[in-house]
Image 1 (spheres, rainbow, N blue to C red):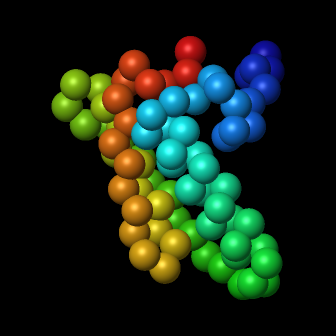
Image 2: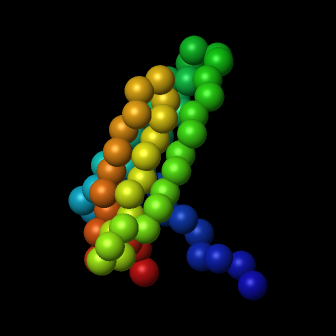
Length: 73
């Protein structure tokens, strides 16, 4: 069984912190590709109430709290 294709970050399928997180990840990857050297860490954990805390470490740490109702279905 194959998963449905994932729409690009610029797609209207994402909103709120989910859209911001994906746009940020896209930006840091493109910046890293331009530079030629990079290492990133992405971590996610489930918080109370079903929200997700996404932490992107790319030189600095960026944190996004994504509510369960923002997740694509």
